[in-house]
Length: 133
Image (cartoon, rainbow, N blue to C red; front, side, top):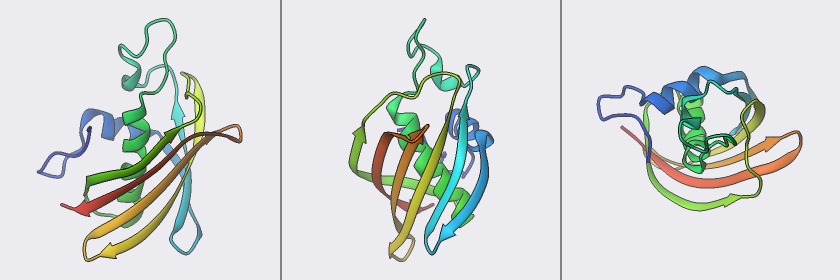
């Protein structure tokens, strides 16, 4: 899975996702939202799929972890993906709404629920556990 290196620096895709997040806000205790722009220049489209670019599922999973890092202001690594449902592809040129719910399960271990929508339609629902680096 694409993630931060052990020295805490962003991977190429992690950095791309982080730079595309805007409008970060806390909506209620433990819940946050932002928008993420998947314009055609997004590097995740490379080879996925020529002539009909869609955001790879691993990038949608990674978006949840990267957004949690932004909120928590600390580097995280994915420990497990406990649930992942893809309902609709995210295409080049679309702006998605990303909502997460964070819950600290143990010291330095978080449960992250990430929901990604475009125009009100659910694209992905991801549940993962991430630990501090």
